[in-house]
Length: 466
Image 1: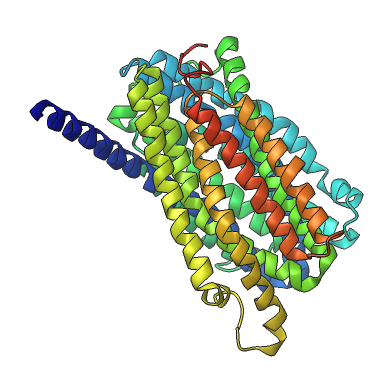
Image 2 (image 1 turned 90 degrees about the vertical axis):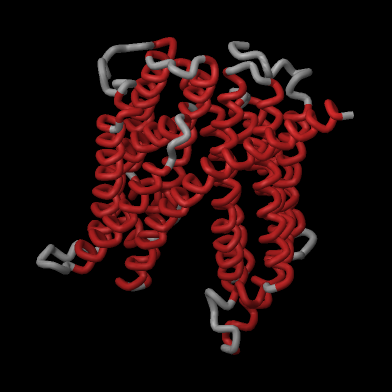
């Protein structure tokens, strides 16, 4: 009896320790993600002060930039589970960690080059998409200043993966917060011509973001070069030395992650376009509901990144119980938070919408009512989105990325968007039909990912080097 009680106490303590470790790693990652979001939000707000044309051109450019950037973000993110597994296998590993960081940066250069070439021709791309010529020209000017931020941002992500795998994410948070301040001040000066600087408008916004990303990478590079715990890895030593096996490994793991993110992001871009086909009120209400959902999503996203590291370390150490604890702890925290946000959306929808619109203004009545109805569906949407995000992070810790990519394509596009189109147009459900489709797609992906996690041992996912 005493032995059974002792074993139960030991198990409870192990889960408590895991929860603390996940939260300690997760909350700085959550705030770092919020800081990145704030940089974009700052640009949007300031461009809005210039006028509707500048805001529209900036939105066109930002959407094109984000659609290309998200793929590279997924590719470079592959360095996190690779480093975590190596540190789990051998806690004092230096050479293999350095190889992964170096080839992660090589991969960043390799993907940045075609992105730069593509974005340089953003005017032609936007015209092919049927955008107004004047806006396309303005957006291209903005893009030719903004596009150079891609490479330093990817470099920053690789270094963030490195310090996160070492479970010291506070440095990335501090640097990210500094980046928000630099971006805001530089944008204010360069967009409007303050403090004796030229008034550059849209171009100024692009320069500000590029400057902020360069300084963020430089600051984090200085940290890893000078901090005692980081500098022993000599991350920038022999940077130009080729390591093709490790380079291929980064792409092998990272390509499916990038494709998964593209599937997810583009389905929301498509949903916004479909809302525009329904009515102006629908697209406005959709934007409000999506903004609220996106803000809440930062929490499970950060916990997903923490799960990748914690599961990856246990995976490298061949610790089957540790893998189980790390995965389910992050999952419970992420889904639990999203259950609370879902309840908030059901109980206080008008309060949430009131942050964006004057609820008493008669002109806003249609948009407010639509946004409230969308939030009712978004409650389910939130829980499913949190579940799929954390489950994807858990599987990435096991270096399992190809099947999750297929699940994402099937769930988001083959089921979610298709169902949304059918409900919105032939079934005449309007915008609520789009949201039901999005929520259904997320539920399908979440179920498939969790089912794969439950079958991880039978699928042979627990054997490193498989």
